[in-house]
Length: 471
Ligand code: FAD
Ligand code: EGU
Image (cartoon, rainbow, N blue to C red; front, side, top):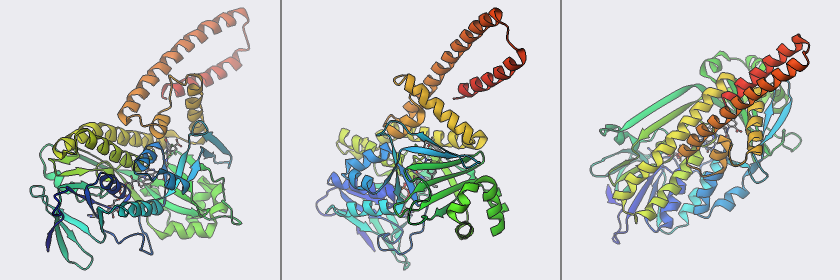
């Protein structure tokens, strides 16, 4: 069966492929403009499904994502269903907990439930009379010359659909993107990192959160790391990041406990040994992939957004936020070019690629950095330095995570500014070092101290300076 999604009115028809977070939000954006929107999602309607399988249970929503929700009138509603996290809580190996604020009082991120957010977005998209939702429609293939899409249904039947614009929001393994790979001069790269992740549930204790709820809990252990975000049902979802080869080494329940006893001892009584062993073997560790490509469009017929355009590793908490920001950027360009797809699409690629590539690089950089040498002491020290420099020079030094998380500074601009700040900090350090040497020499000449003590503290001083230099 072939049908043309274009109706008699010749209003432009937009086919959004993928009804995940970015697809559902995008449907709202296009519907709000008055375009006819058809959304195609391979899965059943998750609002009706009993079991929702899929990736991470909760996500950190920050400024960019919130701004996008605001554009379609959903910010308040979603924020009300999220849990504010005003600080990170760093868990040391000895069980000590240290809070490090994200910023001023109003600067917090939100822990939101992925499935709930997706449901709300789908419901919001559906309230527009000009949207049509097609679940159980898996894009199998499409023709870049004719724009004809082929969908398969669960019963094996096929459906062919045409639209004026195809918007690929079908995630990191995008079927829409497949046709891009055949184009000349299409850049594409995909990298799997050696780490996998696994989600463990920390149940409530006596009906209350097992840990303080308004924090992003972090256990930094160099190559192993765990992160926990709170849920509305008073559970925490703990995400364990670890190299696949280490996941494979742990094959029995006893080994699980042994491993946690060694690296995350404070979490065993909180998660519970039984729950821990059950959750650990419930699902295999999941892979993480980073995907970059360029351009994001083909002619005036197709454009990629969200993970389909740029899957990033989760070490900046920005994947969804960046995908949501894609929708704002596209929307602004639609205004600028009067919805003329032949002008909008190339402009979107021109403007957005550098920023999405920048956040993909930052996330990968942070992954490498954390894995290399971030234990709890180092993490606390670095974030303190960030915050202290910002406190004394609020206009000059803005921490990178602040620009990324709490502003809409273009990602590539944030990176540029970060490099510039590092130069300023290094200059400042050099000057202070010179000053300290001169001043110290003067004092030493005036009153020579016990030389043993001096050498030790000079070594410590040097460590700190080296630490600052790599900031
Ligand atoms: P997806 O959510 O993957 O949705 C794609 C949709 O397309 C799905 O519904 C799928 O069923 C559908 N689909 C796929 N193929 C087809 C097809 N052929 N035909 C039709 N439909 C199809 N981001 C943050 O901002 N903050 C965080 O804290 C955060 N934490 C994360 C933690 C982990 C462990 C991971 C893995 C990711 C995290 N992310 C986070 C990233 C975030 O999950 C993604 O960036 C986000 O889900 C991307 O949304 P999307 O709609 O582009 O893709
Ligand atoms: C990873 C997995 C702390 C959810 C990066 C911070 C993340 C999240 C950080 C996951 C970290 C790392 C930042 C936020 C956030 C920090 C951030 C990472 C949410 C630099 C559910 N990251 N994440 N940076 O600053 O900017 O607190 O799975 F451990 S939120 Cl890796 Cl702000």
